[in-house]
Amino acid sequence: MKDQSVKYMLMAGFFFAIMNVCVKFVSHLPTLEVVLFRSIFSFVVTYYYLRKNNIPPLGNNIPVLTLRGIAGCLGLIGSFYTLQHIPLASAVTINYLSPFFTAILGIFIVKQSVRPVQFLYFALAIAGVFLLKGFDFRISTLDVIIGLSAALFAGIAYNMIARSKGNEHPLVVIFYFPLLTIPVVGIYTLFDWKTPIGIDWLYLLLIGICTQVAQYYMTLSYQSANLAKVASLNYLGVLYALGFGYIFYQETFNTMSLIGILVILIGVFLNLYDRQVYKFFKK
Image 1 (tube, rainbow, N blue to C red):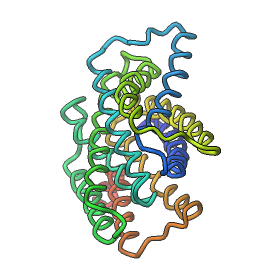
Image 2: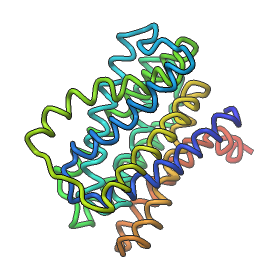
Image 3: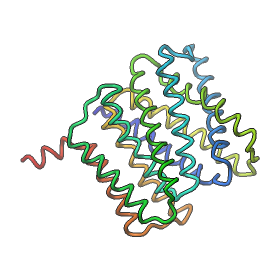
């Protein structure tokens, strides 16, 4: 795994963590409205830089980019919904099952290899989600379904990003998300509008800025490394979420919920360093 791709993903994770906090701060606003504001910001900024650098905004492989945009749209809606309706660390943990969907789908979509033992690590992460759900009364079955669906669609989107490697500029890949999201959520938002007040505007601006930066670095990372490996770095966001959830929202967790989060993180760690672990126990 290239050091550069690791650096890109770590930077993406940090900015996504800040974005998650800001989304939580505007939980009183409709989910699709928050998605709309985030998409408008991304559209304006991305289109500006595409034009400035004379990069054709529609790219070369329109079907792949379109699927990336649609899957990204559905994934973000589900992700923002869970962030607004359940504790921050739990929402981030469930949403961050996307690396495993990314790796599994990557076998078929981009033909990237997954060692058989990695499926055991995937199973650990899923078990962690069930522990988290089973012992946290604040999380409904519907919340889990929406969170898992968001992770699945994110996995599809990330594979489309990997498919665009060498063919599309990162900004073009990013551009397709707002291009397809704005029409979808914009129509619904017209009938469910709630005007942001005061500091809400600052949080919405930060959501746009942090997501734009995070998406850029994430795209660079997925275009330059093995999906199964690099995607696991996303899970560092769970640690950010635990800290931010406690500091900003006074969220606490019982022992079993923390064990669930720990099991997920163990699964991710083993997946990220599976070859090193294999060599260690082989000695």
